Length: 130
Image (cartoon, rainbow, N blue to C red):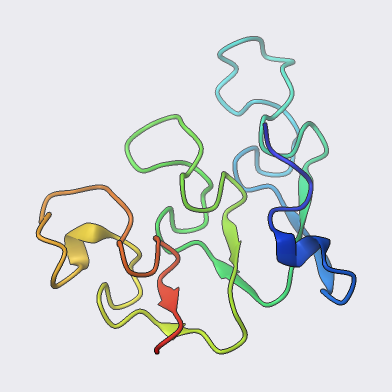
């Protein structure tokens, strides 16, 4: 399901990879909810306790770096459970959700009670202005 590198940028030989602690399992390498078994591997880091991401990266705005989708036991749909997201070098705070990554805070998304990611920054809280 999850891979140790998250994007095509990470596969690029020029990208600098950094190992980050898996937020979903808190670096333990085990399913944090023990649903299948208390010994089941974490689906995000595949039991390693960490994943590699390309820099630059920021804490996931949508899940606040927890790796868990708000109000659920599922992995965050924005960061895939890592708790951190890769961002472009020229990214700045999303002007639509003001960095929260949530549609509920997006001025022009029309879903005030939603727990969905902002449509403009895809939940990262940062975007590249065009």
